[in-house]
Image (cartoon, rainbow, N blue to C red; front, side, top):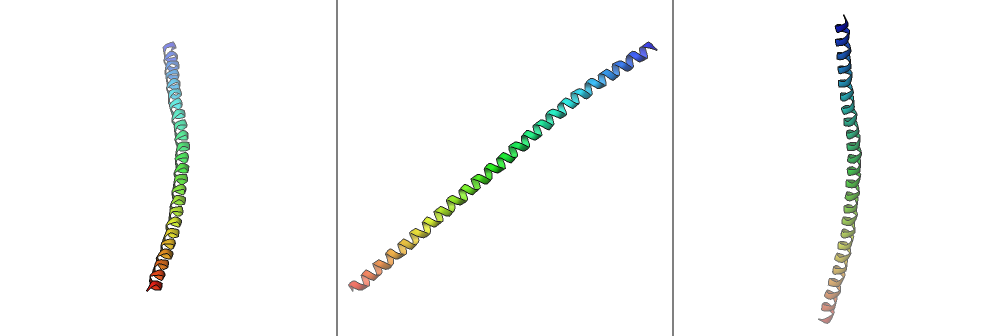
Length: 87
Protein backbone atom coordinates (compact mmCIF):
# COMPACT_ATOMS: atom_id res chain seq x y z
CA UNK A 1 0.00 0.00 0.00
CA UNK A 2 2.85 2.34 0.82
CA UNK A 3 4.43 1.64 -2.60
CA UNK A 4 1.21 2.63 -4.38
CA UNK A 5 1.13 5.97 -2.55
CA UNK A 6 4.82 6.52 -3.34
CA UNK A 7 4.27 5.77 -7.05
CA UNK A 8 1.21 8.05 -7.12
CA UNK A 9 3.18 10.89 -5.54
CA UNK A 10 6.10 10.27 -7.92
CA UNK A 11 3.87 10.32 -11.03
CA UNK A 12 1.99 13.37 -9.72
CA UNK A 13 5.25 15.22 -9.18
CA UNK A 14 6.58 14.19 -12.59
CA UNK A 15 3.39 15.32 -14.34
CA UNK A 16 3.47 18.57 -12.39
CA UNK A 17 7.08 19.24 -13.43
CA UNK A 18 6.34 18.41 -17.08
CA UNK A 19 3.29 20.68 -17.11
CA UNK A 20 5.40 23.46 -15.58
CA UNK A 21 7.99 23.05 -18.35
CA UNK A 22 5.26 23.11 -21.02
CA UNK A 23 3.70 26.21 -19.44
CA UNK A 24 7.10 27.93 -19.40
CA UNK A 25 7.67 27.26 -23.10
CA UNK A 26 4.15 28.37 -23.98
CA UNK A 27 4.76 31.59 -22.06
CA UNK A 28 8.01 32.14 -23.98
CA UNK A 29 6.24 31.45 -27.26
CA UNK A 30 3.52 33.94 -26.36
CA UNK A 31 6.15 36.57 -25.52
CA UNK A 32 7.92 35.93 -28.83
CA UNK A 33 4.65 36.31 -30.75
CA UNK A 34 3.92 39.60 -28.99
CA UNK A 35 7.41 40.86 -29.84
CA UNK A 36 6.99 39.71 -33.45
CA UNK A 37 3.63 41.49 -33.65
CA UNK A 38 5.24 44.69 -32.34
CA UNK A 39 8.06 44.38 -34.90
CA UNK A 40 5.55 43.77 -37.68
CA UNK A 41 3.62 46.90 -36.77
CA UNK A 42 6.89 48.85 -36.77
CA UNK A 43 7.82 47.47 -40.21
CA UNK A 44 4.40 48.39 -41.59
CA UNK A 45 4.75 51.90 -40.22
CA UNK A 46 8.22 52.30 -41.71
CA UNK A 47 6.99 50.98 -45.07
CA UNK A 48 4.15 53.51 -45.01
CA UNK A 49 6.57 56.33 -44.17
CA UNK A 50 8.92 55.30 -46.99
CA UNK A 51 6.02 55.02 -49.42
CA UNK A 52 4.82 58.50 -48.46
CA UNK A 53 8.32 59.95 -48.86
CA UNK A 54 8.70 58.39 -52.31
CA UNK A 55 5.29 59.70 -53.33
CA UNK A 56 6.19 63.20 -52.14
CA UNK A 57 9.50 63.04 -53.98
CA UNK A 58 7.76 61.81 -57.11
CA UNK A 59 5.20 64.62 -56.92
CA UNK A 60 7.97 67.18 -56.49
CA UNK A 61 9.85 65.79 -59.50
CA UNK A 62 6.66 65.89 -61.57
CA UNK A 63 6.14 69.53 -60.62
CA UNK A 64 9.72 70.37 -61.62
CA UNK A 65 9.32 68.55 -64.95
CA UNK A 66 6.07 70.39 -65.68
CA UNK A 67 7.73 73.72 -64.85
CA UNK A 68 10.68 72.93 -67.12
CA UNK A 69 8.34 71.85 -69.94
CA UNK A 70 6.43 75.14 -69.67
CA UNK A 71 9.70 77.07 -69.60
CA UNK A 72 11.00 75.25 -72.69
CA UNK A 73 7.71 75.87 -74.49
CA UNK A 74 7.94 79.58 -73.67
CA UNK A 75 11.55 79.72 -74.86
CA UNK A 76 10.65 77.88 -78.08
CA UNK A 77 7.75 80.26 -78.71
CA UNK A 78 10.04 83.19 -78.05
CA UNK A 79 12.63 81.85 -80.51
CA UNK A 80 9.96 81.21 -83.15
CA UNK A 81 8.57 84.72 -82.74
CA UNK A 82 12.07 86.21 -83.09
CA UNK A 83 12.72 84.17 -86.21
CA UNK A 84 9.42 85.26 -87.76
CA UNK A 85 10.09 88.86 -86.82
CA UNK A 86 13.53 88.77 -88.43
CA UNK A 87 12.13 87.49 -91.71
